[in-house]
Image 1 (cartoon, rainbow, N blue to C red):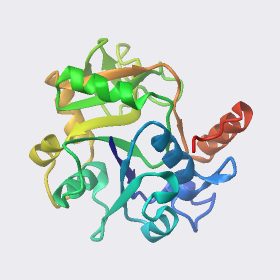
Image 2 (image 1 turned 90 degrees about the vertical axis):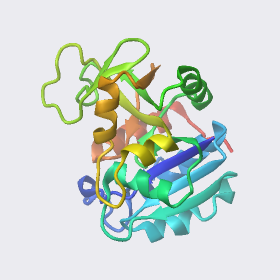
Image 3 (image 1 turned 180 degrees about the vertical axis):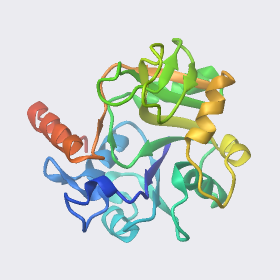
Image 4 (image 1 turned 30 degrees about the horizontal axis):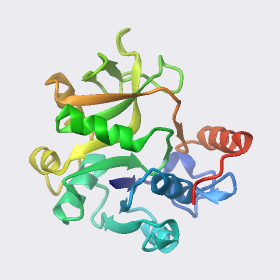
Amino acid sequence: MQCLILAGGLGTRMLGVDPSLPKTLLTVAGRPFADWQLRWLAGQGVDSVVYSIGHKGDQIRAFVGDGSNWGVEVGFVEETDGLLGTGGAIRLAADQGVLDEHFFVLYGDSYLRVDLKDVDASFAERGLPALMTVFANDGQWDTSNVVFDGTLVVEYRKGLTTPPPAMRFIDYGLLVLRRELVTRSIPAGRPSDLAELLEPLSLRSQLGAYEVRQRFFEIGSPQGIEELDRFLTDEGVTPPG
């Protein structure tokens, strides 16, 4: 299994934590966050990781290296001419020939609790070009953005201030995409957001869904770091490997 990690953002909400580091290298429960993430991926059976980097990407390269410390093969795709957004970064990786026929997409600030082999099997069973993991959020952890019918994401809308009552679920932070979908649907060489791909897919009943029942964590804010640090410490979590 292959995972593309989107780790090229500026991390503007985290400048007060440690402005010298890219977000994915911030310390959480005594370790750089990338260490937690890579150990989790390796323990789930992922053997190939591609980092999409930009801002302070040289530090990520130096820490992660070739991935041998985690038993995974790591490659890098770097945005050199300005930020391309989440969609543009994925298209760049496809254009550089480093993506498998289908692959996971994970944000560089997300700590998740889901069985990746189950997600991969669900993706294969659906036979659709994309699958989104979803969580019954009900506005608790962030603004809900998904209408889920038990099988499909029937509507996905990013950035709504007040979602409709039917929009109880949220994008959990892990996708599976087919490479062919990326090259066919995301424009090359210009910034784009994943929402530009996912919103139309949902309205065409082409976006599969996998429901996760455990909350997600993210380190995109100081509060998020505190919550994850407390969870990992209180639970005595030791990453595999």
